[in-house]
Image 1 (spheres, one colour):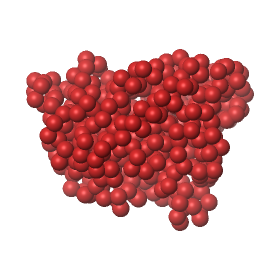
Image 2: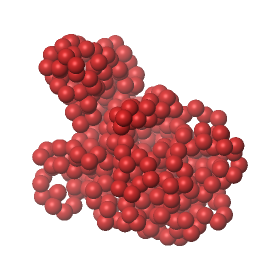
Image 3: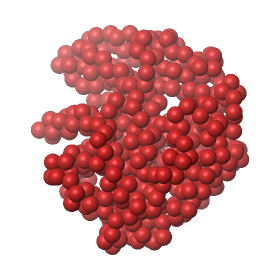
Length: 458
């Protein structure tokens, strides 16, 4: 029964979602100035601003900043973006104008948690407008601090919409929260159960619960005992690398402060929405730059949510929830470095750009779904991939076992071509096998593109 219920929910999640090649509608709630990581995440967000349709950029409070949201920092960073916008649009023409970003910037509830819900704020009204908008795509809410501004917006929508329209608006919400940083997160999950959450709850909004959360994989191993393990690519989240590749590169990079605890703790809440071919937004259990989550009831939660798996992922001999983000670190950091270089490079030919991954002649960034039976052999061919800068390409293939439900299946790869062999799958075997193609160019910095192939065996 549990598997049937999960399957039905995932079908609902998918049917309510637009194709992963569409831009994500996005509201950001950020407790800027509680420490440097929000400002860091904001710089990365604006470097990828062409990937989103922004519905709101809202300064908020949290348990770490209990009053006076810092909209001034938000606008200061947009001003820096304005200085480099003419360069960014050379490399991707759909970067939003600075004027538009200023129009969706606002402050949320002025105080802390559920004690600050008495009156609407400019930020909550932006969310209300987004929830009422006639748009079939999900509305993603990226919560970097406390979500009490979303809480107020939900209450207003409940008062202003018919029950049917309000139910539909809730079902389109996708809230990815960086743990619980005020009491309104758990309160929303009790009061509005139709809203989809991706969160590792922390009770009661206790920072000591942060250590096991998936989002810590963005850079959590830069400090403490994990650093001594000499894990791969840890240098990419050190202040020295960030200074050379981000902070010292142009006006937008200059808004990126050195980290104190970890780099960009809030970034996973939007990183998976970048359209890189992994298709993370199609379902959080696929895994990708935003981490991997499963649909289950966690501790004292009133109903299932997307939260970290009970079984951690293994990566280089370590087992922890954050490994579902760590495994992609080299690529997302080099990709960020390339975006910041775009901001200071007025000629397209003078910068590097991502290759285009193609599998079996299917271009685009959507997940490729194939069907097969036990014992079958499937051929995969990425030789149609290309690079806009003319750089030579290299190819790697892997089965992402943590995201796969199929027992068995092997992969043999030779450059751009690979074969999936299902001869070891039992005759009554059922499940999905996730195969990830990564295409890398030879530019500077070296950039990747992916294509996820899901083989549905039945």
